[in-house]
Image (cartoon, rainbow, N blue to C red; front, side):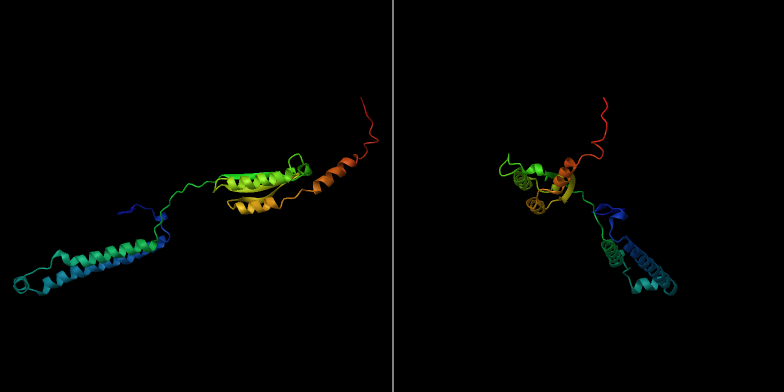
Length: 196
């Protein structure tokens, strides 16, 4: 449907399209006005002598007498469109990029080859990266030591990621389990025959 000054619009572009039922009322008013005008004209022709009528009322009503009715109908049409709540979809480009920081929290990060240790250096680098990352890019945090865990889901809130980075600790579970596995021989390993 084309709306003057607004351009083409579809019924799906309205918040409350059911308000267009009010147009039936507007159509009813237009029909009533036409019926009243035709009945008035017939009544005048039936009971009046045209020669006598022209001598008594020489000025005939002009078409301008319909102007108030036309303005009323137009205002009701505009009111109906306004009540229906026209909407206009605008495509706004969004940066949907996601960066996931992955930090190792295994016991290997205890090494001091990078002062004070690898974990502290990784924390500093991660916070600096979060500060320098382009605004609008979603940033998340994953830690791993044997298995990976999402600590912070992707978000534009850099402070949440930096707080989680500050709270990182080395994972002791996997070291103990790994040591236990290394110390305990496989069942039956001492009895298994070796064949060449």
